[in-house]
Image (cartoon, rainbow, N blue to C red):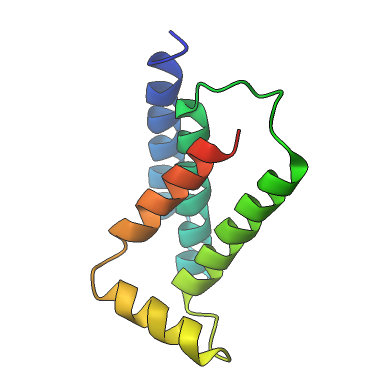
Length: 113
C-alpha cells in the first residue's frame, strides 16, 4: 500500500482540493494562489513517491530544496524583474510551457527526503 497507494491517494486528494478551490471560490489573487497550490501539491506528490529513509536527510539539503522551490514559484509568477539574466531564462523556459516547472516541483519533492 505504501509504495503505490499513498502516491495515488495524494493525487486524488490533491486534485480534488485543487478542483474545488478553482471552480467554487473566486477571489482577487486566484491565479497566484492556484499557482502556489499547484506547486505545493506537486511537491507533496514527489514526497509521497520517495521511498528513502527519512532519518538521514540534513537540514542544509532541505533548506536548499525549499529555497529552490520558492525561487521557482516566484519565477513562474513573474515576480523576478530586477535580475535580467534570471528574467531571460524564465522567459525562454515559458516558451516551452509550464511542464518543466511541474516536473521540477515533483523532482524537488522526491529528493526532499
